[in-house]
Image (cartoon, rainbow over all chains, first blue to last red; front, side, top):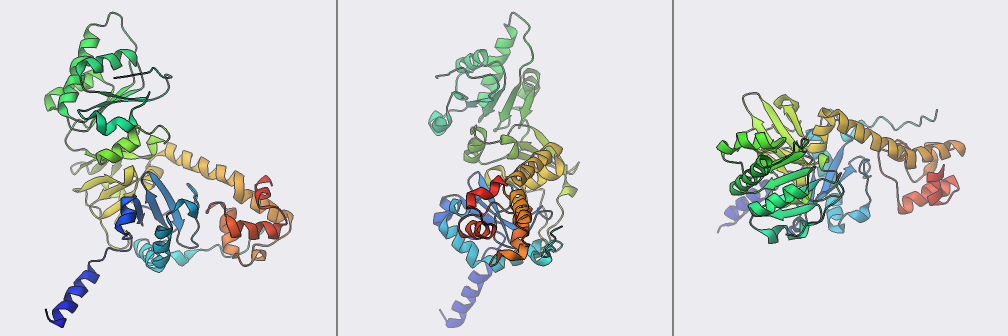
Amino acid sequence: MSQLTFMRRWDIIISEEPMPHDLDLPKRLKAKGWKVKIREKERLEPPHVTIMCGKREWRLGLRDGAFLMPPGGKWADIDDDVWKLIEKNWKALQDAWDKKYPTNPILSEKDDDDQDS
Amino acid sequence: MTMIKTAENVRRYVILDTNRERFKRYLSNSVYFCNTQTEIGKVYDDVSDNLTWVSYAQRFTDELVKAVSMKRATQRKTSPPRDECVLTIASPRPESVPTLHGLFSRIVGDSPGYHWLPKDELSEVLFDNSIDRSEFIIAAASDPVTRTLSLVRGNCQPLVVPFSFFEPSGDGTKPDFGYVRVTDFGRTIALGDYEAAADAIMYESDRDYRKKVTARRKESEKSFGASLFRLRMQRRLKRTDFSPLSAKTIARLERNEIGKPHGATLNAIAKRLHVAPDEIADY
């Protein structure tokens, strides 16, 4: 196999990687039921990624990394390796949200003022 | 088959299938298993209301029809209408559909157009008494003529939404109503590559669900966010006074857009407010 052929095949592998709206998890995590997704129909919600494991789900805010209410949640609920992958792909997830919901982008947060009244 | 009578308000489920072993872990005093007409008749006699029959094969739906029609025909007294639902995971013979509707108040899955959750996920949703089944979707059917999508919730209640409800995504993903799947334990409706969040569908189209979610949000307001706001006001602090936490984070905590903080974050807030971390919620 020539170097050129090898490079082309590698290019194909890269291009076939799943879109970041459905984070590709290792088999071990998939087998345990973990999923990390940005789904449709959520334009009215604060930007977030949905973490699922079986029937349970958590919504992680993509602006500040905090769990949205409802249902809330805490990091202790999430497998460490899932967290590491989310952290590693944070920018890609934010970009995916912005692409999916251009009318509700990550940087549209208007509440950076300090209205104490 | 063993069966214990339970309180009348508990919904009970009867699994009609060949493989008892597959469902063994779900069986309880509210989930029964039958595979003969005699067993079906016994459950029918013992449980008079709040009952859902779940049939995994045509022949069991036929057995159910035979057993219940026999019971009804030999009934001495007129009994009040029973709240019974039949889920036909394997769609029934078309000839048996009118009889099913004559015998039971609700039938779900009476045509081959239904797409169900995968069987193992369906069992997890249907036979778990610790969850609110109405928040999960268990089946969907698409009608290209009326351009509507019929969804079935875990409590067997229908939810019908028009195709126009599913606007294309900003990244160009469009719903494919010819390829409907219910996935993620009933949390997602997949229309081809387009994966719609079930809770978002329910929030937009069901007033009762919306009220329930709003009530939960209000409940959370009672706990941490509102307490933090009141305490901060009492201490005459600004949101910018919580460094290294940003004013934005404090604002979102106060609006309950994010859950109660833990660990170092909670300690930092408490220290600035001059209270113990577990005292914030008391204000």
